[in-house]
Image (tube, one colour):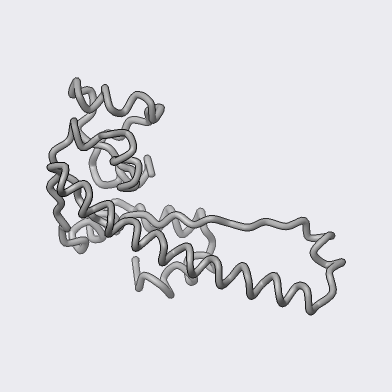
Length: 155
């Protein structure tokens, strides 16, 4: 995240979450980047007027298993676990979308103004600055191809 904002020309500052409210309130920082539910929970809407919905990041939850233990499970159990985890992952994603829509309405009612900027200029700036090529090196070709499968060509 720090690299992303640096490549966009910002001067990002990592803070403990407990310090974000006062940093916004006193002008130490100009903005913050958090999910809407945290903006609501921490009452950041009291010290910020605007929120830009940029979809610049996607966070997922990962399930990890011990490989040796996994291999000891019978194939039918592995298949069942895979199906259940996949179904729950899809449900979690939908829950997050629903929660985000609900939070947007809730925060709007509390006075926060939302905008949805065009993402094309951001992508162009990230391409020119070398962000995507740096991230591709970090992710590797296989991970990069998988990312582009879902978001389209990035570089």
